[in-house]
Image (cartoon, rainbow, N blue to C red; front, side, top):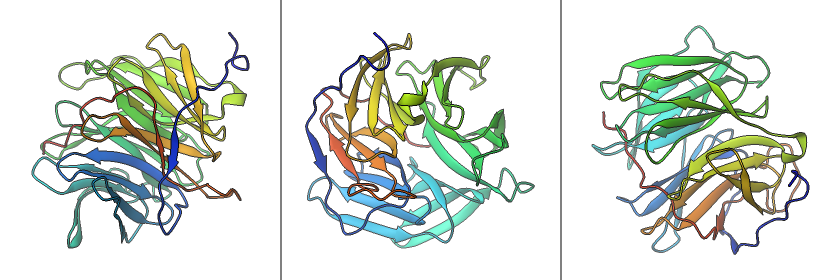
Length: 293
């Protein structure tokens, strides 16, 4: 079956009602301790929260672009801002810098991240214009030290880790390429391998997450859908969404059976661009991890 032969999978879709749309919605993360979904608006410099029990929406302003936030075992969050890694508290709002990985690159910013089962954060950077290959991949250790583990990214995106913890997937969106790395127990990476090369009609691979059955879900920027891939790279299904710039997906809820998907309104005139979507995929996600430092 070719890329154009496959038909979309029908799925129940809900648009989360809220007073504003995201300019560049990204980084959804499920926090079971809060019973809430968090995500960011990178360009709008916002942190957003959706309480799943009553549907209440909250947001906070950030002093600079924020690419992601991830929960911390001891409470609060670690956030990736334009200037680097920070601790983040929301009530009241407070930021404290941890490490600026690229002080020599003022045109770069942090873009996407994930936490592994050992409580380490994997985070990528990119040039603000998304053109040059000046982005890197970093690992934030639980002792708050930072190591650069890969380089040469145009738009570093969507790190996610397989359920058994042995494989890291990471994307260069501009190249349309998803990479795969073996991960050792010490966090060291094996050689970078190409897992997927998106054909032009698929748009660009953006954020990702894994499900409990071994599938890898990828958001398609520019193609208005999310796809599920098997570990051998087979595109098993895709679900269409009413916005073209789809950025990332995550499983949430007590049973990890509610998928939420972020999108962007930047540069497009679409009714539902920048909305948060909930999609019934029929799959469940992996238990989320928190940063252990």
